[in-house]
Amino acid sequence: MTLFRPNIDRMAGYMPGEQPQDGGWVKLNTNENPYPPSPRVVDALAEAIRGPLNLYPDPLGTKFREAAAKQLGLEPDWVLPANGSDENLTLILRAFVDTGDIVAYPYPSYILYETLAEIQGGEFRRLLLKPDWSWDHAAIRDTIQNARLVLIPNPNSPSGNLWRTEDLLKLVPPRGVLVVDEAYADFSDASRDAGLLQQPGGERIIITRTFSKSYSLAGVRFGFALAHPDLIAGMRKVKDSYNCDRLSLAAATAALDDQAWMQANAERVRGTRTRLSDALKTLGFAVVPSQSNFVWCTHSTRENKSLYETLKSRKILVRYMAFRNVPYAQDETLTGLRISVGTDAEIDALLAALKSIV
Ligand SMILES: *Cc1c(COP(=O)(O)O)cnc(C)c1O
Image (cartoon, rainbow, N blue to C red):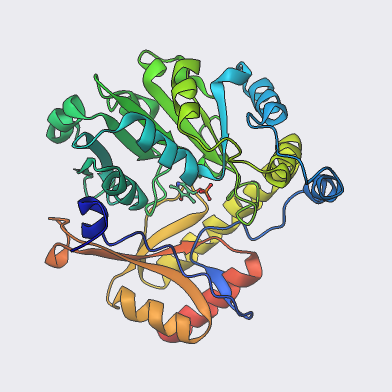
């Protein structure tokens, strides 16, 4: 006999990327920013620590919402702060998905969506991408018609490619909600406004953004959703009262205020990304042109898994991924390495190691 709900009993649970707790690693496996956050964040945290930590934080994160709304030309009731984007995704599943409802997401992509659907008791459907990571709109039309929720990372992970607005608008389910997970948008050529929400159908689109990647705050846990106030109000009903603490609210508000710092780091990452992509190609890898802070690559002759293991034995950590049930891949399993763009020195160390291996 099991005590768990049947769907929880059946599911495997999400496996986050490895987070080694000892030093000395070149860590290129979970897309953190290699550069530190703005000094304004450190100052804001120092001030918050001296503040009234005995008192609960603002349950609505008013200061942050006002700052984010102002920057995007929206009203604060279009903004929902959360304990990382992953929490916003959980809130979305809880607010919109009932047992048996269809939750669709591109495949291969961010597997967490599947786990969240399983927890909620939803039925997930994989929207199989073409081998060049573009959409097969005709093949997925029926699923979109019947979906309650469609979740799309843009840029996608693990591929790093960016889809156009016209593609996304075709994916708004007529009886549901489209979530565009913009975790990596600051590294792309796309505009940073929330213009998608003003498009036809935009009243059923939710954008999620995070401070973990471009703002260098993965260790603090903060993200926010942008959507029509009706959607935000429904999501707010299912959140913990105090989902963002005083420290994360202070850090995120200060980080948002220093756009120049974030942009400069994103620019450095983009520069290193070009150099990494070119070098990987000369080493025999096929590399997807990336609009993100990582690249997806597959070697023409070597096994991706053994490359990952050899690098790991040298204390260089990249992400090996294997996606099953991909009909166009060898043995129906798409494998590859997702390599985060680190500092120039980290990427030099990676490339030197790869050169000696392949
Ligand atoms: C990193 C990542 C997130 C998680 O963001 P957090 O704010 O750290 O929870 C969400 N979606 C995608 C696609 C990501 O890669």
